Length: 366
Ligand SMILES: Cc1cc2nc3c(=O)[nH]c(=O)nc-3n(C[C@H](O)[C@H](O)[C@H](O)COP(=O)(O)OP(=O)(O)OC[C@H]3O[C@@H](n4cnc5c(N)ncnc54)[C@H](O)[C@@H]3O)c2cc1C
Image (cartoon, rainbow, N blue to C red; front, side, top):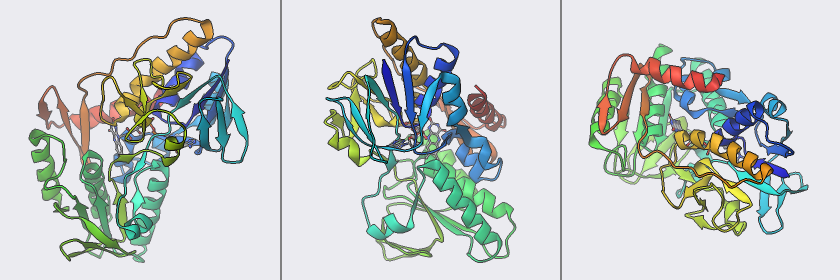
C-alpha cells in the first residue's frame, strides 16, 4: 500500500512521529515537502521577539522520515488527480499512490492592492517570513533601514507579531525611533474574537506603543510606505501580512469537494468526495464540525491520521476524529508574558509565558 503525505505540516509531523514509534505493516510511505524543515508556529512570535534563535522553531523532516521509514521528496506537489490517484511533482514527475494526505497549510489572504502583494511579506511560509525578518533586523542594526514596521491584520497572529516586533526593535536601543503599526480593516482588533480577550490585548498594544489603526485598508504600498484609504501614510520598511488563511489555488483544480477552497472532510479525515484522499490541518474543512484554522487542531489530527494509515494497512475499519469544542489559547505579549483564554475566561498571570514556552518546547522534543 503506497501512501503519499503531501506537505510537511503539523499533522504530518505528528503522524510521522507516531508511525516511527508504531510502524504500520507493509506500507510504502512517502512525504513531499517543499521545505527541508517544518517551522512550528507556536514558537514564531518568541523568535521574532528575540527570545530564541531560528533553529528553535525548526523540525528537520529528513531524520523524521528516516525514523518512520518514509522516503522524503524535496519538491512540491503542483497537481493531484484523485480519480487516477496520481500526484504531479514540480519537477514534472507523476507519482502514483493508493492513498494520499494533504497537509499543505494555507497562504495569506491578500485581496488588494497588487502593490501590497508585492511589498508585503506573508507570515506563511513561516520560515521565509523569519528569514525576511532577520534581514530587516540586520538592515536596521546597520542603520541602512529605519526601524519602521507594519502588520496588516489584527487577528491573534497579527497582534502577537506586532507586540513581538516592537519588543525586539525596542530592545536594540537604536538611535532612530522605533515605529510599529498594526492595521486592521474591521472596526476593532481581534475581529470575530471576544471582548474579554480584546481589552487586555488593546491595553498591551497601547502600553508598548504599537500604533493601532482600525477601520483602515491599505490602498497602496511601496518599500517604505503604506497608503491607507483615509489618505493617511504609514511609514513601513517591513510589512507583514497576517491577513488570514486562504487555500492554495491549485486545490480548486483537483475535483475534490471544497468549501471556500478548503478540502471538505468527514470525521475520518477523508475527502467527502474522494475517500482515497485525506486532508488535515488548515487545508481541511471539517464539514461535520467546522473549527477555526489553528495549529492545535492540526496537531491533534496527527495521531488520528497515523492510526488511519495503520488501519488501512491492516484492512480494519477507520476511526473518527472529534475536534475539541474549546481549546487553550496562549497569546504571547512580546515581553516574557502571555495571556490565556479558556472556558470563557481570560487570565493574565506571570507564569503563563513559561507555560506556553513549556508546551511549545515539549512539542518540539516529542
Ligand atoms: C504568527 C502565527 C502564530 C500562530 N500561533 C498559533 C498558536 O499559538 N496556536 C495555534 O493553534 N495556531 C497558531 N497559528 C496557526 C497555525 O500556524 C496553523 O494553524 C498551523 O500551522 C496549521 O498547520 P498545518 O499542518 O495545516 O500546515 P503548516 O504548518 O502551514 O504546514 C504546511 C507545509 O506544507 C508545505 N507545502 C505547501 N504547499 C505544498 C505543496 N504543494 N507541496 C509540498 N509541500 C507544500 C508548506 O511549505 C508548509 O511547510 C499561528 C499562525 C501564525 C501565522
